[in-house]
Length: 145
Image (cartoon, rainbow, N blue to C red; front, side, top):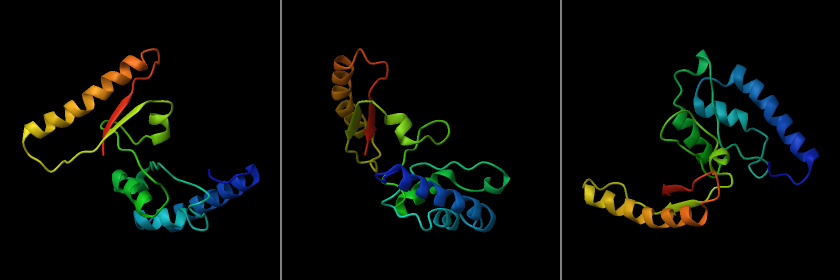
């Protein structure tokens, strides 16, 4: 929620809720039309949708990762999170109060030597974070971007 007051936040959630009900009945032809219907009349400056998870027979054929990507393309989210295992998780749940190592990466190489270099690049700051933050219960995360 990006509105400064509770009243404006309640209004945005109300619009989003009405849009959700409408989209569930009339906008399920495609993933894109559903998300666009969901965000109708809710300006991106007021709300960010960083994760969607649909369940049920009407949504079985939908690609969950494509839905997350469409959130970014439509301007509804600044970033999305794809866990390596399991179902979709909001990035706020994964990143909350955790140290993060973000390393640039180039992923079109095919030899193992380049992969080793990337792992070594992440290993040093990751070890440093572990020593510095040893008292925290949640270990730091490392990402290639």
